Length: 134
Image (cartoon, rainbow, N blue to C red):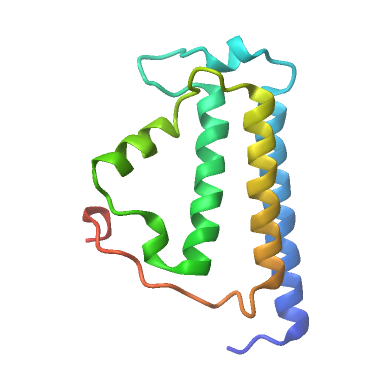
């Protein structure tokens, strides 16, 4: 099946609209909360609401980097990379909700620009070898 310019334009618009809606759910979840509240861990997990915002920022950045640069953009999978990945789920000392939301908006803006400017939404990159891809 071939897609024409109008189908492609509509698909991009639908994707951007869906991303916008789901990003607003996250912002709504943390609206009016203090740094202390979004840093609070409510389970034995390290994850907190601030960590969730931070994690989604990392996911959007990594996705954009992967689309532009391929598997090399995902890191080496070494100990330092794994530690950085784990830190992406936690609010670290000195991080604020305002700062995390600002970074999230920047990552979202880059994703939106990428979706709008890609020559084709059918473009792909090879997945790197990893245990979860077997």
